[in-house]
Figure 1 (tube, rainbow, N blue to C red):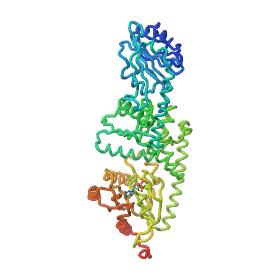
Figure 2 (cartoon, protein in one colour; figure 1 turned 90 degrees about the horizontal axis):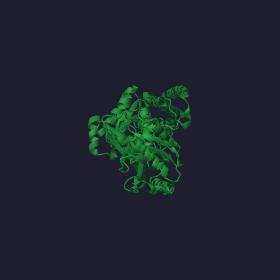
Figure 3 (cartoon, rainbow, N blue to C red; figure 1 turned 30 degrees about the vertical axis):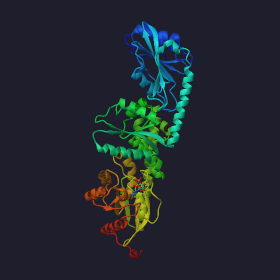
Figure 4 (cartoon, helix red, strand yellow; figure 1 turned 90 degrees about the vertical axis):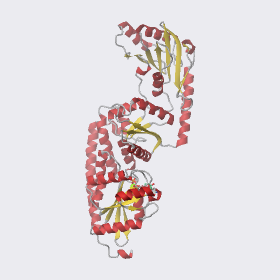
Length: 549
Ligand SMILES: Nc1nc2c(ncn2[C@@H]2O[C@H](COP(=O)(O)OP(=O)(O)OP(=O)(O)O)[C@@H](O)[C@H]2O)c(=O)[nH]1
Ligand SMILES: [Mg+2]
């Protein structure tokens, strides 16, 4: 392992050999460098007219010799650990002098190096040394401390080990303080991309925040990047990623969530550059589904979707796999499963598919039994978080309160209710819809939504208190059309209690519908009447005793 990295073209064999010999050098572990090392570096650098950078570890061994500046040094990636430094430092020469450059400092910062040192070289001899190391976030104006230039020998007796130790203690303390202040959720940064959609991009970012919160994340920063042309490699561009890494450092965040789907290679590149865990929207949704799946069927559906998403991302990857699999709090299909090879995953997919077939069969039978039971079925559909479950509970005879998290309902829930003048009915709750439902998830949910094919009437619940009601309405209707659901709909404009009356009118003018509040139980009588009418129009006959109910 004495490869010399960087701009080695055109070097004489003797120079190469001397560079390779640098690997044999050692520095006492609590010192920055030795006098011999500084002199050798200066001399060599001067002879080849190029800067030389050494990567040193904490034991004082040379881990990489690079012809070039700090930026060109191959630094092994580390898992992002807020409280620690990487254990590597860079010692390099500056032929022109001038102190630490901006790239030096960003290399220090992005790789959480222990330190970066630049040696000025004049006439083949070291002159001044420039040193910088990180400081805890917010401790100083910048994220690093740059020491005034000193003659290089001033650092020879300096106990850098003690400085490092104190620094790591400070970092750990700062992180603990922030953790206490914010509760336990995983701290995440959201990255939305505006490719020219304008206000829609803002709405998408709000939705992404809701999804992240539902998954148990604490959103500490949102970034909307305007970028009509995506960067093929880094999506939002390398500079923006570096900025986000700074934000993550300040906010003690370990995860970046992108509002769009990333190609496997992009996710890897971004993880490498930022040293943060990277999730995209599909993975986030899968993560939520994984958390909420309770029945064997729902679990099988989610696992299937996760594996299908993972499969193309497994091409010859080792380390990265485990990162890609996890979601917030790493509830992926599990580390062990991720380590199995593609073939075993494919076998698992086949197995799950068979299981799901079996469940579907069981459900069809259960459905038949219900049909025989003869009660009219009212399906409740709508965008996620619209208030479907709350409405079901308000309409049904008794129930548990809804949860203010997206996708609170992952398994269909059926409750009995009573419609004056008609009699007993069954209300069926469904999973919330979302825009741009990833294709794999559509497949996973088709089975759940199949229940809707049996419904006599659907209530479409629309939250009119949030912007974008018309779009959400269209999304739901599009999915229903795709599923071949054709039953009559009754539109319920929900959350009127906290909506701007002007917005309610605006939506009602365009879509019609009945204004309700599921939590305040307002407008429910009119809604029930509309349901009776719709059912009767479908040929459902009132039960004989209904008028006395
Ligand atoms: N202010 C107000 N809040 C409501 C109303 N209806 C529902 N909510 C709230 O909206 C949130 C979501 O309600 P849910 O009934 O869980 O929504 P959902 O459509 O079933 O959501 P998913 O099953 O997750 O798709 C909860 O916090 C409810 O309390 C309403 O009429 N007014
Ligand atoms: Mg629900």
